[in-house]
Image (cartoon, rainbow, N blue to C red; front, top):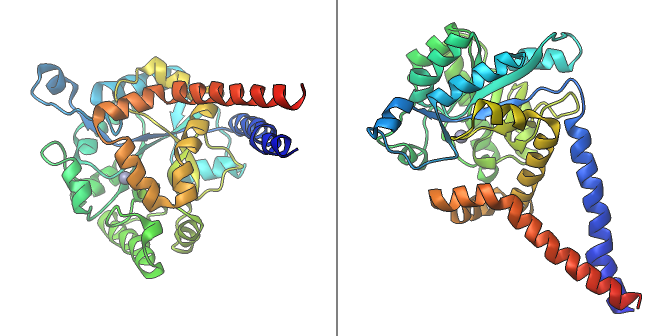
Length: 337
Ligand SMILES: [Zn+2]
């Protein structure tokens, strides 16, 4: 009897819940109008990388300028128009219709390479982007790009705004908001908003949560600070059913061709990414963003280990799934023999 109950709890219930979850994921990616929000970080000069003048082992939080060029060309050819978050909200509210397919291009952290390398590419393709700026990045964030990149100046931010791009906030320090007190979170949200508005002379209404540090309290406070949209670590395509302060995105990293990018925008592929991201975020959701962040640092420590995990996560999950099904079959055979 005990064996049967344990088996029901371990195999039958998770199977039903898992099936319902996968159906929910598929449903999310088939809601319309669906707008993929792409997530970029910093860029490398492809010519300098090819000549060996620039060496950067990072694979995930970076892309080549030639790759962004290829992505924009592929998106335009496939009929996509780049819109901003004000337009996205109007589309989702039914106040604006879009003839073409729409996409939002977002760029996190405010790196100088966005000014030097991404800006000319976007101009060439007549596309606009959303740049999430972190005004006084902490030592850890600066150390990560030391000697390779830097952060945009107030003049460059104004220049981006004047070119039609959106300037959004990514906090002052790039710290984990979920670990901060209410006063600290409020300061990160309002001070960055006020300073950015002063730099560009226009309202700053859009926010991005650094380092998967969003929880219910943080999301509520983002709204209270006057932001109308927010993005973070959630993955997938965005649709009108999404919470505007928890809009999912699709991360684009180095080595992605234009064709591969278009394939990743397909609802089935996006559902798979949503699923993998939800699995990756389990430690963060169960044990909190601090533990999740430290765990990710250990797991994804080196660039090679990170690349291996990124590329093989699906295989690892499948392997675990086969083991799980095997145990389930063993339970069934012993329960109903
Ligand atoms: Zn960031």
